Length: 240
Image 1 (cartoon, helix red, strand yellow):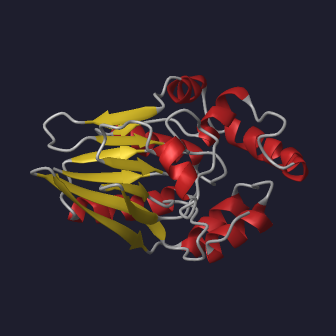
Image 2 (cartoon, one colour; image 1 turned 135 degrees about the horizontal axis):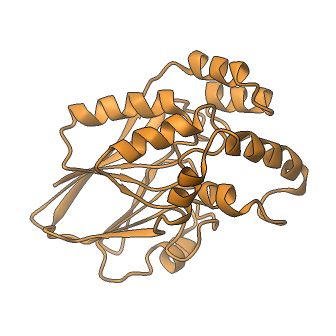
C-alpha cells in the first residue's frame, strides 16, 4: 500500500493544491492529513473545502484546537498572544459553524493496520498531546513520547514543520514537514510517501514548489493582520 501523509497546511490552499497534484502522480492508495489544516493561512475555508472533498483520513492539530476553543495563556509566547488572537479572529470570520464543528470532532490519532503487514501510528505532535514539541535530535523524548505504542513499526507526525527520518530500535520515526509553512529554511512544500508491503516500508520525503508570491498576494488582498511576518515565513521557510 502507498500512503501519502500531509500535515500543517495552515490555510495555504495554493501549496495544498500543488502537493495534491504531486500526490496524484504518485498513485497513492490512501491520503492522511495530520492536523493544522487552516489557521494562519490566507485561504482557510478553501483548504477545508478541499480536504473535506477528498476520501482521506484527517486528524486534529493544535492550530485546529485553537480555532475551536481559543489560544490559552502559556501556549504561545506572551509577545505573540495578541497578534495570534487577531489572526484567529480573522480566520473565524471566514469559517462557519459547520467548519468549526468538523474541526472540533476530528480524532487525534490514526492507527493504520488494516490489510498492512506493518502497523503505522500517526498523530500531530505526540500520541497524548497536540502541543508538545519533539525535535529530531531529542532521542530520549522520541523514545518516551513518540514511540509509545510498542507494536507499531512506523511512527509519523507533523507539528514541528521540520521533515526528518530516523531509524531507532528497528523502527522508523518520520516527520512529514509542512505543506503550507515549512520552518527548515527550505520553502518548498513537504509531505511523506510511505510504501508498505510484506512487512517492509520505504519512505520518501517529497518537496514540491508552488507559487509563493501568489500566496503572499492573497494575504495582502484579504487584509491579513500579520502579513509582514507571514510573508517572510512563506518566502523563506523560516519560523514566524
